[in-house]
Image (cartoon, rainbow, N blue to C red; front, top):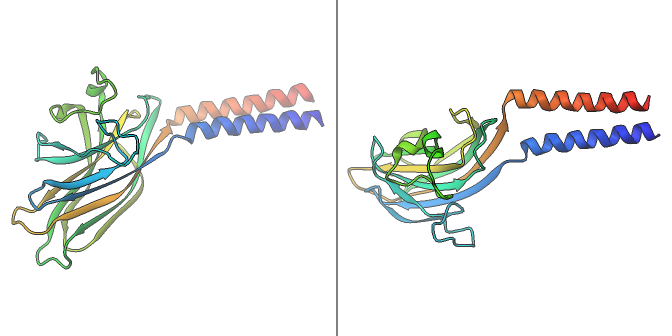
Length: 221
């Protein structure tokens, strides 16, 4: 009986260790209304707030005008401390709504996921995300680029960012290119950023778990 109790305890401990490896996901929300001139009219979300608003609904949208292909609007979300033993997966649900529908001519929209890169890691950033004067601190992965003439929903699960580490900050980034003028654009949705261990970490965890179970079994046999 004691052997099975110890074995059960070991299994619970192994499960707890494994669970802690994956229990890293964070989900944030955002929304922004933009004019045809790529200017923000209103916006919010659960992201970084430079004023420290405690209600978690006043995430700040920041203009990044020095990107190579023009100005983006960006909301940052604190992720986790930098970790080179993990990588980053992002899932999102984003709704792009130009109005009123239907549009006579398509409007052009870009949406990207950003992260603080290795150059940013070397700065004294004091828990602030990369600022608009340092595009070199930002990695950017475009997830949508194209014309839309009606309500469009973007949905994807498990997009692995092309970086060999888990960054400290991630963000949603929007650009509305409509040079002929026209209607406003509403962008809203959620983003889930998840730390995932490298395969080598998983191998070590599994080997350690098997060793623990074998040790318990031998001692109680």
